[in-house]
Amino acid sequence: MSTFDRVDSRLEQDYVGQVQIPAGKLYGVNSVRGFENLSVSPLTVAHYSAFRDAFAQCKWAAALANLDSGVVAKPQAEAIAQACQEVIAGNCDESLIVDLLEGSGGTSTNMNFNEVIANRAQLFLGQGPGAYDVVHPNDHVNCSRSTNDVYPAALKIATYAMLGGLISEVEKLAVQFDAKAEQFADAGLCARLKLSFIKMSAAGCSRTLFPLCRSFYLMQVNNENAQCWNRGSGALTHFGDHCNGSN
Image 1 (cartoon, rainbow, N blue to C red):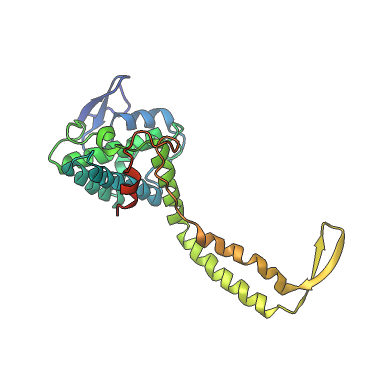
Image 2: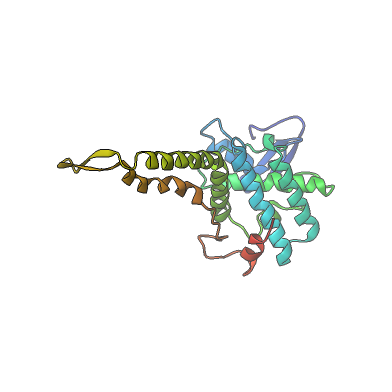
């Protein structure tokens, strides 16, 4: 029996067997398998809010795109979107239990989010968690998506979000570098090339390196909505267009 056994619990089942999940928790059997078999650190997928939020944003966008594509009905899509907002608000962190460094190639992480969002959506629609009769983790939350594209997309979005403060400070540093380049433009500078000889140059020549600082600012999150190694399998032809148009 699972280490998640509790007196107040619900029963979920997969091909391996049955698992009892504490009442009030939103994760499911796949999340439990990932937790029990792939935990290697004290950090969960909710540890970095930017990563948690990015994953939920991807699921939210997919729900709206699937609604536009006609593959997910409006009640389910709206409930999924509402559940994603709950995840972003941090209201589901206790149910995001999979290790941040789990070694399943991201599948356990993806399923943890799928199950939590599906169960929260079920509650919004007046159904209990674990039944998945109205909102299913795979058939609805993960519809048209796969771990192979949602995990990299979420990671890029989270990285960009977490680098926002750094980018701002590097921009300020670049301004100071430009000012110093102007200040010392005519000053002599000794430079050794290949350890073979020394030549004199103007300190202002080093200014050509300063635009490199600004390259951080040009960083863009470019999610091509790849499906299964960029081949588009598992999604309708225009799914990516709908996803890019989602807010």
